[in-house]
Amino acid sequence: YYIDDPASGKTHGPPRMLRSQTSTVQIRVMETAASRGGPPIKIVAPGRVYRPDEVDATHSFMFHQIEGLYIDRRVSMADLKTTLHHFARSYFGPDAEIRLRPSYFPFTEPSAEFDMKIRLRPDQPVRWMELGGCGMVDPAVLEMCNIDPEEWSGFAFGFGIERLAMGKYGIPDIRMLFQNDLRFLRQL
Image 1 (cartoon, helix red, strand yellow):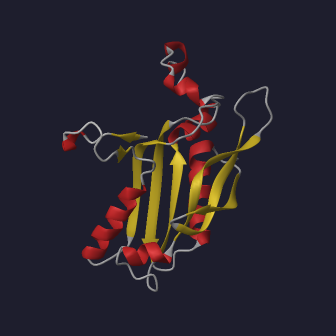
Image 2 (image 1 turned 30 degrees about the horizontal axis):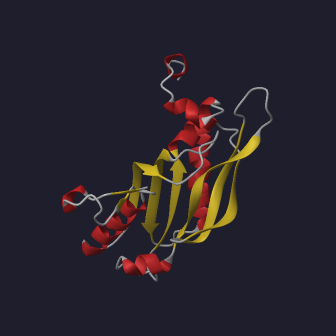
């Protein structure tokens, strides 16, 4: 997931890494907001990302991610859960069931995995599927971006867009989205 830097003129110069998440957009937005007087901040940032994942039915080395960031006064974990709940019900329907499982991510505290009950095939039972990660923006991150964590708080989340499509349309294997089989693609 590293490539040679063509600008260096060397084939073995300092490598550049393919983007592993879209979080860099959040940092730039927070720094820009701080330089312009501060939050509130509300953004959604989509992008293609690369990970050293083994390819299987629910994982790919390349996928599309969408991240959200909300910073304002008195933002809480309840706001995050409510936002995710409303998203799930709007996108998947009124019966969408979600859960947040405690997890670890380096830039949020507390952090959670966002799961939803999904049936990928009509002949299979409904099961929990991870859609992404989320959490409260770590106060240290706010400080590094010159945002006062005593005044401001916020949450962030990141979802795999392919996983969202899999859940909505009952696609059992992520690889189907990248095979260019027109019979499959025309169904979407």
